[in-house]
Length: 209
Image (cartoon, rainbow, N blue to C red; front, top):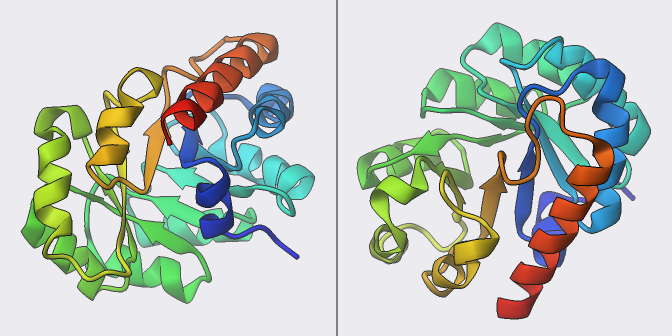
């Protein structure tokens, strides 16, 4: 049975963001992430040949990991991600048309929000996973306040300035997951380096959950 987002977040509440990855290295990087214990991988669309990287990851790891895109801005790219096998679509905004198109294509949207108004608009459009970005600009107290009024089925991920070093603070605030990029991968970083970084993140989060 294909792994679900909730299964992965329960095991390890991290989305690994591999901005800048190339198709030639994406499988080695993907295996390093998965084998370290992280089951959700996001390839931002401003990476080199992102649709090819998503396709390769989906074929290789799609039964075990949730694979998808980040930095999705329009409906046409949503179709290309779905055609490549992507299952999640992370956006930097809350455009209802893009959210709805992702759902039509069988993907789970994870729109980026900052204010309660944006969070409610995204949820009204059909999104149940919302990405606070940049999280560090708002602080963990923002999560507590907004989660108090959001419907219970909504899950919040924090991205930007969050990671192993402050996981306890954000988990205590009620966060459901983290999006971690530069702490895991930067262009040119080796699979061995990525593997160790992911193992360190997994250990740090498990220590405070």
